[in-house]
Length: 187
Image (cartoon, rainbow, N blue to C red; front, side):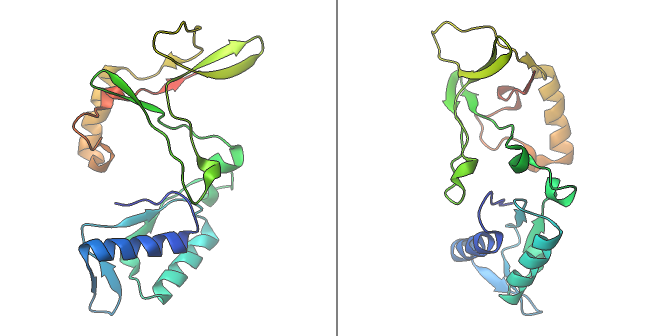
């Protein structure tokens, strides 16, 4: 499953179809539509609403692509146009512990630099009535955080078992990345 993140959906999806076609080949099905190999599919989640679904489907099928190779994700735009972009907020992974060593995790999409994220470990601190996000630096003194751990290793173990049963594609994909390396925090 390939999920593009940003950019003009028709252009990005068609480019991905071509890349996958070049790497793995593509077929023309019995109805005459171009389709990628069965093990590769796409989900378009960015900018999806009632009108863009119709536009994307119309343009890509007009270009000969079979609609069975992509699906649409459902976000805030299908409900009430309130989403992470209009709120200017998104919760993202910013660091991962691999074998006791922390690594920064961030994104910097070339098609939409405004969606870049910060990498590193962070704490939320309170300065009077204001809140600030500060980077955690190993060995440096840190102020008490306003965050509390929401899931424990035990809860993540349960989530792993549920994911294996109901959504195996959500499991970490590298042997060094485990569910207990990822923590969710809440104020």
